[in-house]
Structures are given as C-alpha cells and as structure tokens.
Length: 312
Image (tube, rainbow, N blue to C red; front, top):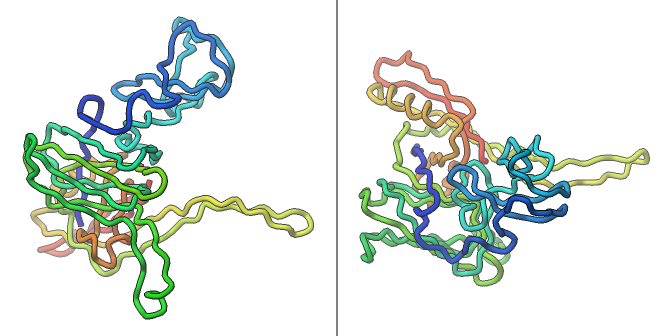
C-alpha cells in the first residue's frame, strides 16, 4: 500500500491554467462597499483565494470586522459564508472536495518545486486525463487514463452495460526530479470538466495489503415519513471507507509510524493496489484521511497493522 505527504500547491506554483482568476462571480472583495444577500466575492485567506457568498446585507468595514473569514471561522461570521477556493485553485484545496468547473479541454500546469512521485486525482467528471511530466519544454513522461468504463464480465453486460464515470485515478512511479514540472489535460466530449482534488506527493510504501480488506459505503441519504406513511427521500452521496490489514517489515515500522503521524488531519491518497487496471483498484483507492491506525509487534520479523481510511 502506498500513501504520500502532499505538496501544498498554491499561487504561482500553478504556472498556467485554462481556468482564469478571477472567474465569473469572483470579483475581489472591497472595503467600504455595500453588499446584498447572494453577492459573491473573492478574498485572499493566507496563501489561497477563497470565494464567499454574502448572507446578510451590509457595508463592508475592515475596522469593525465586517470581512470574509475562512471555514470554520465563517460559521460565526454574520456576513459571509466560505464557498471554498476560487475556481482556478479549487482542485488544490485538499481539505474540501469542492469541484471546479472548466470548459474542455481543461489544462493546468504546475511547478511544485519538489520531487513528485505520484499524482492522485479525485472527484472527477471527464472522459480522460493525460499527464505530461516536463523538463523545461521537453516531455520526459506521458500517460493517459481513460475515465469512462463499462463493467463487462459476460455477454449480457457486454451488450447492455452502460458507460460509467471513473471518479478517481492515480499516476504513480513518476520520475523523481525537483526540476520537473507537470501538466494535466482533462477532456470531456459533452459538458463541463469538473475536478475535486489534485494531490501531488512523493509516494511511500506503508506495507503489503492483505486479502482481508473491508470496503464500506456509508449512505447519507435520509427519508422522512408523514403521519399516513408517505415517505420523502432526500438523496445524498455515499461515503466510502476502507479497513485494511498491512504486513510491515520490522525495519519499516518506525518510519511508517512517523509517516502516519505526519498525515494526521491531512487529506492524501491511500492505494491498497497501485495498478489502476486491477479489478480491486477502485475499491482499495481512497483520497481522504485515516481515522484509526494500530499495529501488533508480536511477530519478531514483521508487524501486522490495521488502518481505517475514510474518503473525503
């Protein structure tokens, strides 16, 4: 199983993008300005531009604190609610799963100024994505992932199975060089491209996943029933989670423990299977956070670790 310490991609590290900033509805917030309910503005929080929506009519005033605040501080802000990063940078705000929206082809170039061995992409709506790793203007590695699939395993499904969207994928085994940049090109024949997460990292092996993996789907849909028995359903998404058992060599235990500690509260990728064409890849690949990690050192040669991961 591999995971990685994510690189924080911000500002000038996004060297080119077909999504502009400011995009529609992302005019910069201004002081001493009248705002109405529903107005949207962008505002720099730390090193990331966020998009905000006005929830109470007011005249902005820095001196009295009538300014936008990022989540979770926006919960106590009377005037603005944080909608997440602006459209250009939304895929790089890893602590939210908000998608961007882009015309096809959506092309984004990044100079991470660090070695990148793997790039995970999540919450995707597109037909395909191509990764180019570049040394200056020279492509040193290129790879395309098809994001439309049919689940075919007999003559009936071959005839009738519809195409479905593959919502997450992984590029791994990339050439490690701090001078390399990368470019992603997303293509969709009809409609907008949408991308929720782009996570670049150096991948680390945290153990061999056993064939005891448990994959769950927590359904957040709800329904209410009236006095006469009528049901009303509010459809919400399923949230996947994985519980895996890992075999770890004795010499790796401390290093893996330190990686897990570093990833406390960090959204990153977790791949129980690395090969994206493997039948178990989608089930055992998660972009999210680990919830629980424990290991047994009863064996003199190897430890047995248990990890639970929940998708963002």
